Amino acid sequence: MGGVLAALAGLAVGSVAAGFLGTPQTPVVAIGSAFIDRVPPWLKDLAISWFGTHDKTALRTGIVIVVVALAAVGGVLAVRRYWAGALITVALTGAAVAAALTRADSGQTGFLPSAMAGITALIILRLFSRRLEPLLNFPDDAVSRRGFLQLSGGVALGSAAAALLGRVVGGNRAAVADARNKLQLPKPPSLNPPAGVQANGAVPWATPNDDFYRIDTALSVPQIAPADWKLRIHGMVDHEIELTFDDLLKRPVVHKWVTLTCVSNEVGGDLIGNALWSGVVLKDLLEEAGPSKDADAIQSMSKDGFTAGTPLPTLLDGRQAMLAFAMNGQPLPVEHGFPVRIVVPGLYGYVSATKWLVDIEVTRFDQFEGYWTPRGWSALGPIKLSSRIDVPGGKKVEPGPVTVAGVAWDQHVGVSKVEVRVDGGQWQQATLATDASIDTWRQWHWTWDAPRGTHVLQVRATDDKGNPQVESSAPPAPNGSTGLHTVNVKVG
Ligand SMILES: Nc1nc2c(c(=O)[nH]1)N[C@H]1C(S)=C(S)[C@@H](COP(=O)(O)O)O[C@H]1N2
Ligand SMILES: [Mo]
Image (cartoon, rainbow, N blue to C red):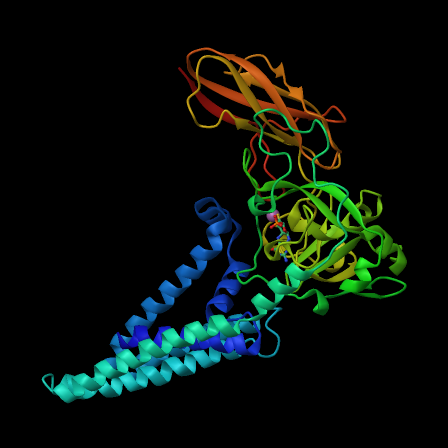
């Protein structure tokens, strides 16, 4: 009891301190972020498949449970020997402080919330062990019991008040949301998808922002007001460039539909979305900076220290890789990288699509590794040709004509053909919807005269160069899944 309350009070003080210091590093965030940076890829994939995009809530909850459980043990030990319980508190605090110190976005004060949390917990633990001593020796002493209960109530109330205060002073979030709402950005000529791109029965060709998948390592979403945003382009360049948000808006703006895909997408998975991005073409900026002939990459960095390594040619070959500030006509949602992120058609997000972008270094692949490379993922990540069946889903269908439909993608190469087969039979050509560009997914549909029974549907795509999709199954690591999306359908 004392241990649990000490821990909760510590965590509450930690989050208030983080709020006042303007750092995202509450003790839970510090531990969680360090955990995310070190988690093996298989565990990350498992977490995504269990919790989907709620994996971060699950992690936060998990950390609180573990901390409170350890603190409970500490509390029990502290009843007899204060130092034994204190040792556990000190160890937990040490872990959180160390975790905060290793984070890029913690600044000089990032460790303070964790340290203050630890000190608070130690003091409260001490108070409890003092109050408990007389109770242990004289169990019937009403005065000691009252003292103990008063202390418990006081600490519980204090923690709740502190937690509330923490929410209020964590006002950075509200300020950034407000700045985002007030932002006036150049509007795309139209938000409507190009004519003919939507196939009957398929998912919406344009993914609404609220439905767009979110993948990142940010346990606490970086909050950057546009007025505070600055981008430095440096490294192997003739002229370093520094850019404010206003500078960015003064440049020519492009609006472009691009389908973003995560390398962790399993065959048939939904870690893919298509949006109209507005921003500034990166090529022009890079050419102004003048990359050295020996450079072959950029390392882009997020406010929170995430990095991606992108081949320089993909940024200069005219495919309109961009610094995007808007998504489907809205300022980037904060979770999708507000105020500025990178979008590169044809590359998986982990090697290109840095959100909360603050720094671009022109460099060489033999000089650095992007965030995911030492964690078992390839340095290079071109998106693989792939296709997915969206309908019919898992539901039972009536015999007779059934619409089979879905999407196929091979960004910056293009999809030229989609075929479907039933029960391993002949491949049948599906009807393709209009191709908006080679940088977006392409929808398809096929009408199946479905007989009663249980059947297996499969889809395969062919790219614009005539290469068929790789049929053998491979997992997402190290450079993207392959295999045919296979769906069982009950008819009858
Ligand atoms: N700062 C930052 N940017 C990031 C990541 C990240 O972890 N941190 N993840 C990348 C990955 S793996 C993908 S797939 C895309 C996902 O972008 P979205 O969340 O907007 O869909 O963002 C990329 N940009
Ligand atoms: Mo990703």
